[in-house]
Amino acid sequence: MTRYARWARTEHRETTRIAAMVLVAPVFLGLLPLLVGAAGRRIDRGIGLPPLRIGIAGQALGAALTTAGFSLGLWSVYVQLDRGRGTPLPMLPTQELLTDGPFRYCRNPMTLGAISAYLGIALMARTAAGTTISLSLAAALVAYLKLLEEPELADRFGEPYLAYRRATPFVVPRLPGCAVRR
Image 1 (cartoon, rainbow, N blue to C red):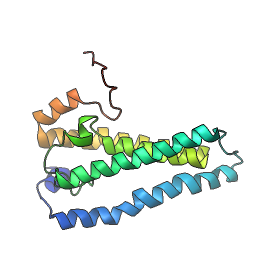
Image 2: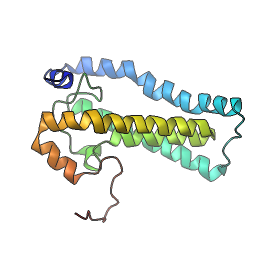
Image 3: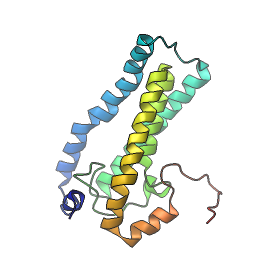
């Protein structure tokens, strides 16, 4: 039995799940945005890169991506805590397969939210290094999801998860009205 399977066998109290999220929230809502924005600008200056020339429209796009991304991420966490009786953390996983709320649009809405938010911060900070950091975080997260989380979910939830995986996009939702060709 894998470590993930052992973790998934234990349902944790709501107070434990909330406490865990309170402890990790500063990393995702504070440290990583600071790394992308402030550290990104500092790295740009250190290696002689000028600020990105994106104009007011680019900065407005950054603000929209940041707002939408954090909103989607927080909605996803709420659904995991409430309906899934778990968290996004592997050691406190959801106890049921989530296919509604933000999970009806894509299998990894929190990932979409995080990537959007951090790229938005990089745009608002006008930093090439911050953009690179955001894309590197996105690549690491996608690798984790594909290599570790998806096999664990398939093992834990079986055919219901496999059917959901076949029917629902990985990260980027389909546009309304766009049919899937098989």
